Amino acid sequence: MKKHNFYAGPSILSEFTIQNTADAVLNFADTGLSVLEVSHRSKEFQAVIDKASALVKEILDVPDGFHVLWLGGGASMQFCMVPYNLLARRAAYLDTGTWASNAIKEARLFGDVDVVASSKDAGYTFIPKGFEIPEGVDYFHYTTNNTIYGTEIRTDPKVNCRVVADMSSDIFSRPIDFTNYDLIYAGAQKNLAPAGVTLVIVREDALGKVDRPIPTMLDYRTHIKKGSMFNTPPVLPIYSALQTLIYYKQLGGITELERRDLEKAAMLYDAIDNSKMFTGTVTDPADRSIMNVCFVMKPEYKELEVAFIDFCLARGIVGIKGHRSVGGFRASLYNALPIDSVRALVEAMHDFEATH
Ligand SMILES: *Cc1c(COP(=O)(O)O)cnc(C)c1O
View: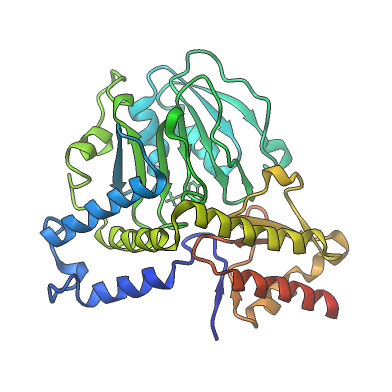
């Protein structure tokens, strides 16, 4: 049976990405070798990483003065690399969930951190608004999409300082205006590639402004200078990322990706809002993520949650269990998820409701 894959990460990849990666594991670029067993410095792999970086720039319309890097260590490594390289004295952070607060914890090792607002007391079910960023901070850090709670900020912040964003779970779902950004990072395993590589887009002139010595591997300038080849990069995830990027371009780029994402999310939120049994955990539509849709059963049906997960499993619908810290359900609607999978989930909700 075809599976409908709603996992939050690692998560669904396009058939195009999976098939081409599988082919290259067997025979990479007609070398007669697997992509797993050729030098990262071969001309064939150099072409892969160059093309992947060029496509990131093309698809996201990245302006001159920014570099595209492919790094190891996951998005979590960026929680410390960002302040290591950019936090001279003081930075502002928005606390919208676990990932944001993990980033805050690391930044505090390097300087003063102003947490400008937090929705922690409300279980991170909304995006704080109307906060002020103090004058003179080195940057403002925020998480665009809160994967665990299903909240999202889909507009680039209008602030009086440079911005750093963790876009791990919604990159390539909307256009980005790079004017205010110093740096954007995204672990690949949600909208791009298998786990193991992190995409970083960094403004060159944001670097070199801190006095502290930076270990070679943690210094963005090392990776800029060496084209992400200072050491062996995660070759397989980068190969897969290239396939995803080719696929994104073929589909019609960001405009088409965003259109599809909005359509899928609207279909599911509509079903939740019109249900007698289910209810969304993020109530303000403006804050709702189009990537991770979080919902629960209303109190009078609460004891049916496990049964619903089993009901879905029997229909090939996998990965809808909510994050262990939140409970309930979470359906992740990443770019590679076909709208038919959303339809299948909505149908399961209707059918389950009708029989209980
Ligand atoms: C998944 C996720 C992370 C953590 O990524 P790792 O690559 O596992 O370190 C960080 N931030 C956000 C928003 C995420 O969704």
